[in-house]
Image 1 (cartoon, helix red, strand yellow):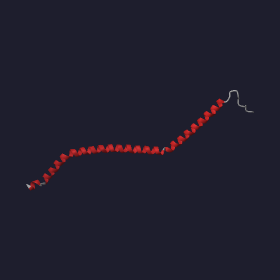
Image 2 (cartoon, one colour; image 1 turned 90 degrees about the vertical axis):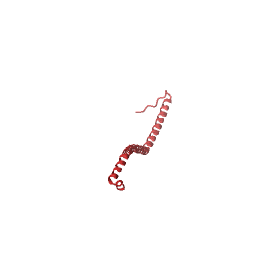
Image 3 (cartoon, helix red, strand yellow; image 1 turned 180 degrees about the vertical axis):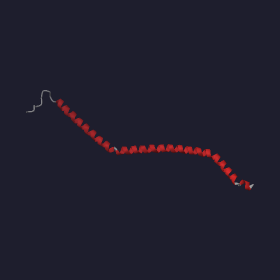
Image 4 (cartoon, one colour; image 1 turned 60 degrees about the vertical axis):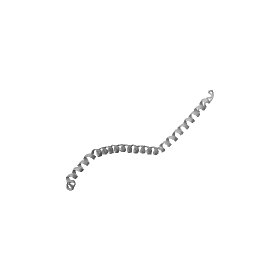
Length: 102
């Protein structure tokens, strides 16, 4: 009995039974892991892309500061033009500017 229970063919049969029982579950786990890996790779790509976009936004602050100063300068010039136009329209209509001598 002891010899029959420890025979190599019986051991191989027991291994085959074990593999046959556990293989479908292992295959399902492998499939699940591959799916999770794909999802995590997609999430990693999204996070890296977002980090890159934020870094680029931080690097572009110099350009935004330049645009801000140019806009302030343009607004100041527009106010000067409005003030100058207001003075010219406020001048009495009867007075003509002196003619240039030739």
